[in-house]
Image (cartoon, rainbow, N blue to C red):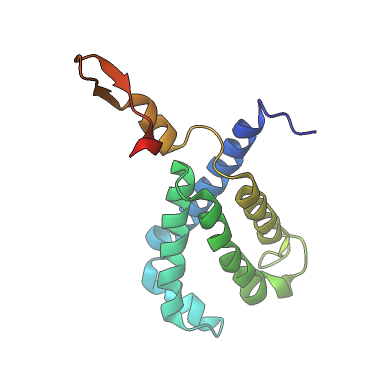
Amino acid sequence: MIDSRTAPYAALLLRLALGTMFVAHALLKILVFTPAGTAAYFASLGVPGWLAYPIMGVELIAGLLLLAGIGTRAMALLLVPVLIGTIVLVHGANGWLFTNKGGGWEYPAFLIVAALAQSLLGDGAYTARSLFARNVARHDAGGRAAAVNVNDR
């Protein structure tokens, strides 16, 4: 049975972990390997080098949106083809274990399952929208502050 009191926090933890991982991978490609180096690596795999740029963008933007809890379901699903690509093009031939030379496909496969679970769970607790909604106030006709429901906009 799902505990409805703690489920939003489980979704939050998963969302933060996935978002952090994708932002870290994007920044690794951008800041360490450089976009040109990442494109060259893609080309060495037989993939068009230009594909590295949208992949880095998807990882960074989707990761940041996951961290914020914006479009969580869509962002998690958007990342699944990226992860499938890592298995098919990079890690699949290296066996199951990620500790194998070149890294196996166990970690990307786990991330696919985690992303699918996140898409089923949704945002979870503490999204940018929910935190913003708590802090937004408006004044009623008498000048008193009243909470604004974001859904009223």
